[in-house]
Amino acid sequence: MCVLTLGGEPFAIDLRHVSEVFEVESVTVVPGMPSLLTGVTNLRGTVISLIDLRGMLGLTMNHAALPFAVVIRQGARHIGVLVDHVPEIHTVSREHLLPAMQAGPAGARPSVSAVLRLDERLGGVLEVPQVFAQVDGGSTALSAA
Image (cartoon, helix red, strand yellow):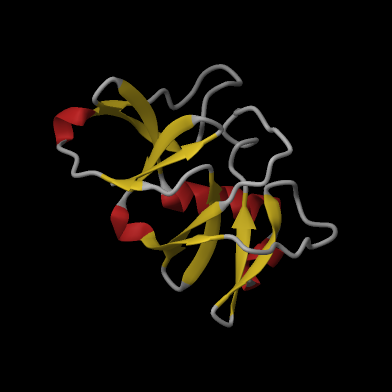
């Protein structure tokens, strides 16, 4: 698992969906896009859409730019998820995964499929197909980036 920090809270993504991690040097804002899309950046000649999941996950949004991005992929599509810190890599066994609440109050997180227990910390496991579905729900224009 790739363990990352969003809004000070730990989250995890299955490594099979992670392409790379990079430091974000510049972001080009794209007018008219949903708030989930922060902008785009150039990564070695490839334009990568950058998304900030803090709002979607119900986390506090401050105005500080997130300095790193984790490139996740689903099929041929790639998106950069902005994160607070350089992610950690952890080997996780099934007993460290707990079920997540799938329905309920407005605070429920639809892209979180499980809760990961790491030492004394708990974090949500982000489901990449659900993240892409949230992005697609915001704008089909993101698919082209």
